[in-house]
Amino acid sequence: MKKFGLVSVLIILLILFISCDEVNDPEYHIDKSACSSCGACIGICPQDAIEIGEDGKAVIDQTKCNRCGKCIAVCPENAIY
Amino acid sequence: MKKLLIILSLLLMVNLISAGITNWSDLAFQNFSSKNNSNFGFNWKHEIETDLNSNLTLNFKNELFYSQKNDEFPADYSHNNEMKNSYFTNYSTLKMLYSTDLQYLKLQYSNRWFNADDTRFLINPGIGDHIRKNMIHNFDLQYKANMNKFSFSYFGKYRNLNYEQLDLENEILRTDSQDDQIQNEYDLYNSADISYSVNQNLKLFTELYYKNDLNAAGLYDQINLGGGVEYDNIINLFSSINARVRYYNNISDKINNEQDHNVVTQLRYTRRFLSGISGFVSYVNRSCYDNETAQVYRVSNMLKVQAKYSYAMEHLNMSYLLLGFKFNPENDGTLGFIEHNQYIFKDIYSTASIKYSLDLFTSYSLKCEYFINSLQSFWVKNEYTHFYDIQKQNLIFFGSSLIF
Image (cartoon, rainbow over all chains, first blue to last red; front, side, top):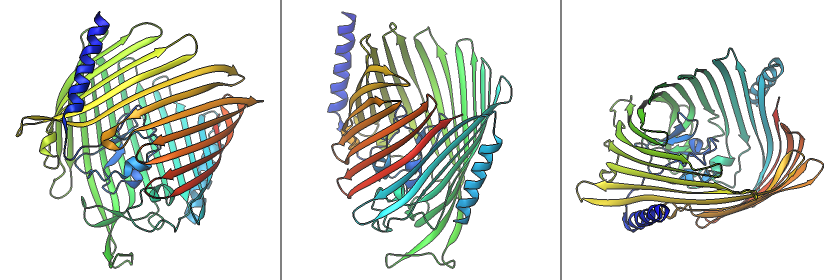
């Protein structure tokens, strides 16, 4: 019963989140569980907005990032979302 | 070429005099080919670590990457993968770690060097017009402490980018010294968080992030202030669940007003079966709230599902079949993948994989690896990628992974 309640809440939340309008200029973020710290995104970033952070994974400086998406194309782990 | 030989010699010397110290060395030669061109390159990663005493560790890591220029990719920033295959760079890190049961301290210096002649130029409206990176210096300090149910952590980074300002005339890059301007940019990043463990499973935390743009106008300053709750439960030996909800307020002139108030929700469920099957389901949602329109917006959704079937332990490794997909519609990140690792004979294994991205590429790879022992191996790999908006490319690698 507990499990059913939890799953129901999650499904409702998921539907609510997905049904929202998309933000006009969405930020990119790093999926830290997938990032291999290879640095390909740091090299290509035309805004110089990516660097290795405290946990050894890439991190995006949102003030510099202009959402060009070049990092998404070079990331071998598809870790940028 | 001279610089390259000096760096290679230094790395070799370090390697020879470092007997008694733990070494990780990965070396891979590659041949990159596209429609009409074929280019040579290599990637050498070397890491050395030594324990000075039971609490103090010294670590040095160097990564050198070189690839001949591929003239098929014009010096045009519109080609996404040109930088990946047409540059010469070196990344070095020296760090000292001090850790006890209750405290952790890390001091680190790193630099990323780009050979300006081989590195394609970049457009950077954030800084100026057109720039070419020369060197990035980073000084990091990290401190963590645990006190009963509380824990505290701080991270600080001082970053310097050294770059050349370039002029673009009639769409031709001018690099004559008269027009080149060597310049620097400085940034200071600080973040701190305090967390409180309510019980074995539940944790409350608050966090502060402050970025200080140390250049003239300080236009790129940013403050994030937030907090949240984390639930972590290892249900039994075979399953665990983790949930984390975090709110933060974004204060910066450079951030869109719509993203002033943000909520990040993370859920992860892992499961393992006795039959050798294991897997996880994870979901991350980013949403924001706009004060002016009083509306909730969707930033991104990412759902990941992965299952692995490990079916036979042969000699030094385990054969497996891996299946998974990622659903990330907002960032064109939806993809599916399959990977199969199979023992062939006498410590030789093969790995075949296919990655299919809905919007960006399809990639096929085949790897054959010979294990000398559990810590040392030699391998050959072929990777073929079809980028939908650019062209097809083929990479052949020959490499070694050694721990000694």
